[in-house]
Image 1 (cartoon, helix red, strand yellow):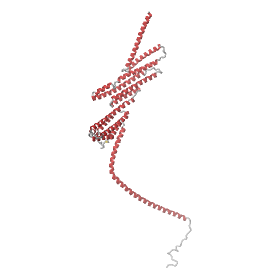
Image 2 (tube, helix red, strand yellow):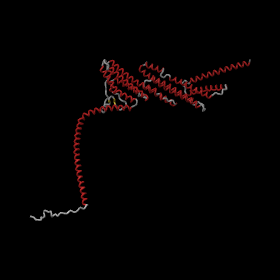
Image 3 (spheres, helix red, strand yellow):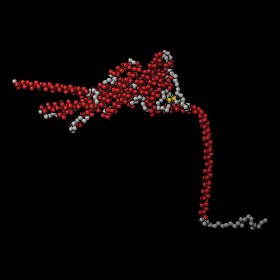
Length: 522
């Protein structure tokens, strides 16, 4: 009986110990959850290190428990080192998941409920409230980007400081653990960056409506990307696909507003049969000190690289307002010019020009319809004039302004020189036409004088030729005579050398008439 009582008491003590152990293990799990929950809050580096150290101690207790259980079960194929590496990897995963919650808690307000509340408040307070609401949304986006940057960089720094030197020096496992650790950090960083870019893109499309705010957001995101570059996660090339399309949308939006305004004005005047709003007062630019006008066919050539608007468009208010809207869109590029958006902007400008030409052609066809009421003649006149001015003046000017806004100054200067040269050619042609009338008589007189001079020169040339021919003949004759004399002299010398028979010399007295003859003189 005594042994049974001792056994029963021992069993009761065993139950108490088992209950205590179970309670401790349950408290251990609760403690682990509390420590991980602590990592979901804003903790400094020392606090974070304390929490991770406590979690590692809990892992050590679990590892010791598993070691004891393995000994009791006499199992020889257990790998405590592998279990420890798995626990460390799990701790890193829990750490990053908990810190993810901390990041999400700081950035979930970007562009969501709070932005909607701000927009509602701004819409109910008028124009001034609207601008302040837009500014508040822009500040919210910038603050969210900065908060996301600081928290991501802080988490990466904490992870590297806590887990980079936590591996055993065993050469068989240290490098492998390092690879797993850095792979885990790389995957987490890539996922956080992708989440950030998705949220940023949504906020940019929804809440950014001016290029100044777009530029500020781009600067903040670029600084975030360059900061992450210090840990090997620079994502600056991924920002262009987010900001460039939005910039193009804003620029083309300004242009379409101007085009729609022109179309509505033309339609209203056509329906009402009035042409007064379509005409204005044409002004010309002042002349410079040289007395020559600085405006050539609507283009004012000036020393600066920005082309001045053609003042002749003031005579056509719808085209002038359309041009102002176009230039307003280009002015947005001064605040935020992204080179990658240039092709899309050029394509948008080409489409805008095509749409404007179609609108002007449609307006011209509409006013040419028989039975148009009101000032039909003036409406037809202004429709034709607007179409002509758009082709000859407005379209070239728009192209030049676009190239200047995009930084292609060489093209703009070249186009300005082409226009100036064309105007100069026109002026020179007029002066040449005027000078031709004045020089026609002189040209005829010069032609007659030249013909007379040529005739006299021809006669003189003929006389000189005849005289020269005579001189040549005389020279030839003299040469022949000299040649004959030379031949005779040579023949004479040859005869004297051959000794000819002496000829009898006649008595001069026999034939002398002066002597007395044989009969004497009478």
